[in-house]
Length: 352
Image 1: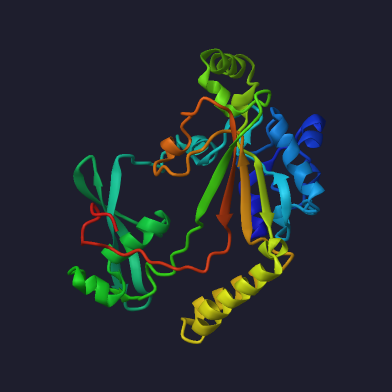
Image 2: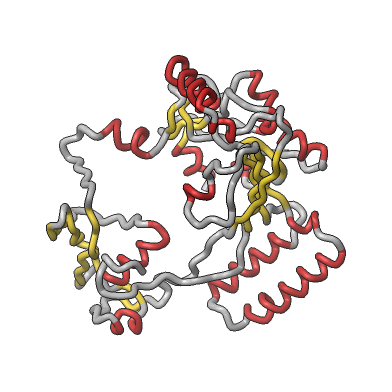
């Protein structure tokens, strides 16, 4: 994957002051991109919490010893943001890929458009071919045919939905919804994985600045003016503190025994009956979990209050408490759990 990571982005070196403040000396420029369209950088605005983060893990004897893009790295560090340091604006697919070619006469992008299914045809020499798509545009059903290829890129939820609506999937599921089976593939929609995340927020001392301070009109006004007039201040920075750690290094002897028991109960016993691809995944994941040099948990820090009992993102990040907080997020990096995504009806308008 390394060539593709380098291909899509360009690493912008930080100032000497930022390099020292955020301990960015781990960067290996040979592992980073230098010609990609997405611009990556470190924030030049950083508070005391961001500075303390990498130092804390050094003191815990978990310093970052190599660039995470090298493929082998554990420890606490400040990570790159997709911010273009030329204007301190977000670098994204629209600005980096679409805008430079938006005037091409052979390119048309449709918004307010929902693809209903992929048009498939059987060729006597090439098998099943994707020849186009059916879609709804501004409430009108339309068809678009392809001269070369159809690229399906609808994410983990709607990619399997579109495949099944098009006739590619488990024959039992497709027939139950009256869809003609074109390719019987029982693996479509299976092996769904996610990374559960939770966290805790802690009130900080009054003198410690956090994002919660933007509740004050004078503070947010000053931050907006600094950004609009000189592209400086807190609005040029986001969260950038994370740690990737081996869970076995934090387990007591009892915890290690519990982990071994859980792996034996849920993994070893099921490998023999699992699909070959799933069995291979389990074996790889187990080796990572049991290794003191592989990352199996992710910890992040955000200098603001977060409400992990809320469901909607806007409510999670809402500044509702009068005090200032720092939040720590913990995510499972290597889950063993597997789920599935399948259609509920033959209509794209019904969520899977």
